Length: 430
Image (tube, rainbow, N blue to C red):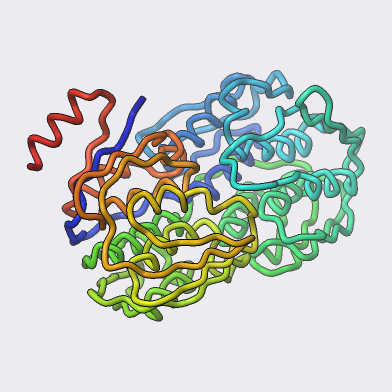
């Protein structure tokens, strides 16, 4: 089993380039199979989740061609099956986007219930509500979600809760439905806008993405296109917090600074120096960080996917901080692991109370999920001594070449899979 071994205490310095947004890529890749012509998608992050989705496409008959490392061509014309039930797809949350895509194109879809990180209850009731409003019959049977319709007709859909997944899924199904669809209380995240822009580039008619009301006029046909995915705001934010925690100086390139405003604001609040450029952000850590309070909220609020990384930085700040998680109820599983490293954190309900400590010490810890795993890497980079991080397959779900990018900033980190490699690393770093 692969692990990360890290010797901490080195400030991260230099430049790092951010890849395509995983959360946008998963929606865009699913949308691509709705065309019967070749679609070229650039800036696709080469991570476990995207690879699993592309393997699934091949399994149902779509043609997938890797042009080079981060570009892929997809042609959905040869799809011969709408039943998606392989081991790869059960491991990722975004499997549900195939429901909207296949239902929109073929009026039928059978997809295994989604997997992904266990960070709390993530029901798909709003997805089902949307499909039913468009005229589909939906049932869950034998671990499969089965949706079918003789025809899909536009509808007025009000989401009871703001849901990124439901917003994208309903957009996928509705863009080829007959008539007009309005989605109210829709999510506003950057990747919603990116998926809508991609669909529009294929000939869809979607307006209002990025606001809480999305209007869709159904079309009969989607055509081929070439499209580049936006940069990943969560990968960018992770490197921003790594710079803060290690008291480093890192310029994060290939980003959209506006997407990072809530993250930049908190870093400035705790005493970091943040400079924005056209497509880059520079973060300079400070030896004496200040405490603050954070509450996760839907975009443009502070992202739930950045909550664990923020907690690590606050664990090293002076004074008392509070982190309140308002999106997922099971997102503090990393706290026990951080405590092993010397952090002082107490969780009550959906709030973590953090008392800053002067420093952390290396330990062997395990990643409970994707973003918490990245946070533990940040903690290990800031800690005194050597840390080993287990279960890094979670981290590899969403970060491409994570350890390579960190090494380019001066981090002492290796991916290992044996005791011998661990001993070699220890001898090398001293």
